[in-house]
Amino acid sequence: MPRFIYLAVLFAALAIFSIEKPTHLVTAGSPPPPGPQFTSDGKLMRPEGYRKWVFLSSGYGMSYSQGASSDQDHLMFTNVFVPPADYDYFLAHGTWPDKTMFVLEMYGSQSKGSINQHGHFQTEQIGLDVEVKDASRFPDKWAYFGFDADEKSSAATSPGKNDCWKCHDQNAAVEHTFVQFYPALLSIAKEKKTIKDGVKLH
Image (cartoon, rainbow, N blue to C red; front, side):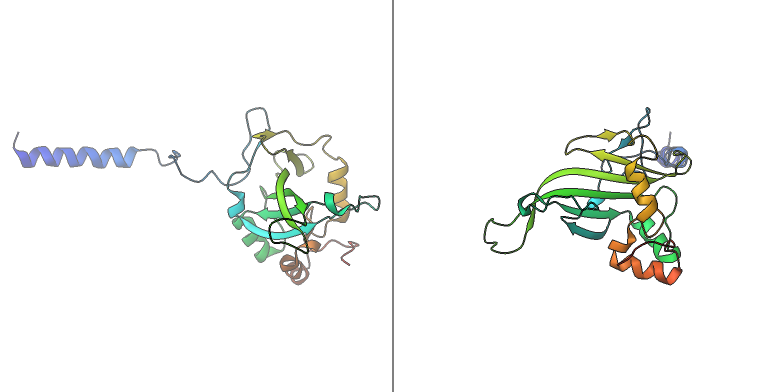
């Protein structure tokens, strides 16, 4: 076979292969699919790469109970992250789209260490809480998951309308999210008039 005919056949075969090759295959090093991912038995898989998401806010020693400990050596830091697409949706609408995820990571605190003489800094990770909005999966729309430092998957906290769910439902400024503690988003919610009636903001 003449060389130019052989090359033409080869290029044609390569073109057909590239057209028919599935585009949905995940290659090594590619980012995980967007949205919450679940195992076959309904457990939420630990979100990957969330520290590259939008950082909403950080809290220190926060508690919604009057009886919480005030021991400065045992107060936690909490950091909250949300996927960029969900954040952009909120900026446009003042609400959260279905499949929204909130990640709240918990760290211990310490005041004396290295050159620090005042204030507190974060130490070891204690746990990870995830809030998911998925109306097709959860009858109560929002569900809550807790991970320890190493868990790869977690079942939703049950029952569905547990104390955590009720607290968010009654006190969160927008839907089930404590936007009152996220200054950059609170102004958006006020502008879009999406803050729930009767919620205490101050």
